[in-house]
Image 1 (cartoon, rainbow, N blue to C red):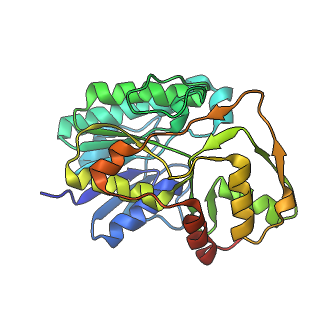
Image 2: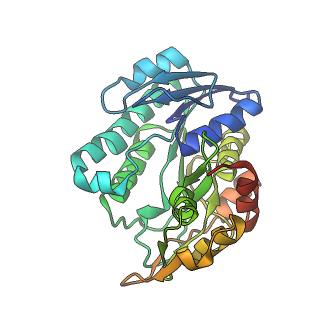
Length: 293
C-alpha cells in the first residue's frame, strides 16, 4: 500500500516547501512543522509548531500518524554551527535521533536530509560507500546524524543532496540564489570561487526523488542526489547572470587556497527512481519565469 501521509519538519523552509507543494499536488496528506514564527505560506494541509531541541518526537508522531517523516529542518547555517557546536549537536544530531527512534517505534519510514558536505572536497567524485570526511561543525553534525539514523531506524533513507537551488514560498530565489541573484540585482558584486566545484540540484528534482524512493520501496540506505553538471561556483554565477539578465561583471572571480570539489556519483538514485535531474539552464529558466526579486 502506497504511503499517503507525510510529516515534513521545516515545511515552511526551502526544501520543505518545495516537497510539500509537490506532494499535495499528488493528493498526499501533508503535515508540516515550523519553529520560530508561523509561516504565511506552508505547503501542507496542516502546519504545527515544533521545537527540535525541546519538543517530544513521539508526541509529534502520535498527533500526526505519518507513514513517512521527511526531516528537512536543521541548524543549517555554518556560522551558527561554528558559534555554538553544542547547539548544533542538540538540533542536528540529538533531535534527529529522537525522530528516527519515534519512526522505528511506529514502523514509519524516516527520510533524513543530509548534505554533500559530509565530504571535505579533496577526493571527488564521491560514491555512497566512500568514507565521510566532514570539514566543518555543520558537516560533522550531519555525518554523526547519519550514523544515528542508520543505527536506530531500519526503514530509513539518507539523502545527500548537492548545492540546491529553486524558489521559496514567497516566490523569490531560494537557497544560494537569494544572494547570487539579489546582490547583483541591487548593483553589488559577489565573489565566486573558480576552484570550488558543485553539481547544482534543482529542489523540485530532489522532492521527486524522495517521493519516488518511498513509493517504489527502493532499498533503504544512503543515496546521492546531484544535478548532471559539475561546475565551478563562478561558472554557476555566469549562468545565473545570463538567465536573470544581471551584469556578468558583478560575478567576480576569487580562489580558495586548495581545490574544493564535492561532486557526487548519482547512479544509485537514478537506478532506484528513474528521476532525471534537470540541467542548470533548464532549472534557472523555470525559476526566472516564476519568481520576483
